[in-house]
Image 1 (cartoon, each protein chain N blue to C red):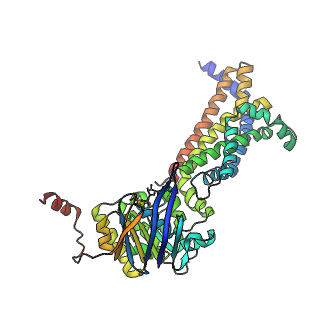
Image 2: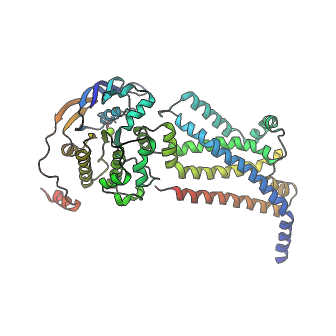
Length: 228
Length: 245
Ligand SMILES: Nc1ncnc2c1ncn2[C@@H]1O[C@H](COP(=O)(O)OP(=O)(O)OP(=O)(O)O)[C@@H](O)[C@H]1O
Ligand SMILES: [Mg+2]
């Protein structure tokens, strides 16, 4: 038993540099996805909410367009989205395969669509009375968003962000097909293709730990922000 | 002065338009306390919401202090809205802001040269010790006091109240009525109260409109009860009511 354990530890140490490198690649992809979710997902989700039916800022055509974008991206099988985006990525980035930054492009697109939907749902949970109150105070749309909506939705926005990030981890494991690397790709390569089962399970456990951390952080922050 | 001039209000429902208000002509004088009573669905809230242009009349016009609020540019509309305070049945406080932050909120939206301070209005409604509490830590009556403080901080000319006591028990209702009376006494603002609770109107208002199915049936002068408002403890009142035959 101790012999087996020692052997295992030796192998983990042997594979450690490759594993850390893979984690770094996952980190790059997650970073871009999370950044896009915040910088573009939040505004797009807010726009979805503001332009929807019954709002003072209702705008049917714009709402339809954004809705269509979000739905198409989200219903696209992710692997096909990755493949379909190859020519575009090559155009703007110079290369489409073989590095985690190139692999981040599809991650960014799915991140925006996914989180935008979550943001819209969070905003929909705000009681109608809060909007009316803002309106009765003569708030501009900008003030409504920043001083009322985001304040009341903030813990729900954080939980949505944690959930979205966990999905990003899952999406990132596919990026091996275009040479994007990452810890998921590592697990597939060593476990599936080379039968290094122990190493594969180690990588999977790492992924699970990563997910648990995001979950825990999200819930903890959300709880802290929630004064309801 | 608030004037309704032959106002109709329709809502587009799927099959046919719903007539919420029809042919409303009414004037509410500066500085008076005016009640609007009627059953559920009579159109009371809609009438009130026309005053601060949360709704637009389908026909006719509504003017506030000589300005026709029914067709203003967005910017002018916000200017008009910022001069009118409003309190709500469900209080509509922001749960993630403290009492003090809630009360101060209107001042973050616009400049009010004559504004009061957060401490002043909290003292006025008797909640100076709750400044750092969150709404979830307050009772219904306290939440409505915060709502009133938030409306007062800008020193509006007009205070609109939509069922201000309907979510509260009887004793708390009387407390809130007392606060509103004090608002009227000290700030001389025009107060319009919409409610289905007749005692509230009786206690608070000088005149009242009685509404039915979107129309004003009658505008009357309220005869105030002369006896002092008797705010008895809840348990005493319960005993009184339950043992009375
Ligand atoms: N935004 C809206 N869309 C469609 N119909 C509406 C809308 N607002 C009000 N109505 C309808 O207009 C009528 C009058 O509503 P209003 O809210 O003014 O009544 P109310 O007297 O305030 O009733 P309550 O005591 O229940 O609050 C009702 O039939 C209501 O269903
Ligand atoms: Mg109503």
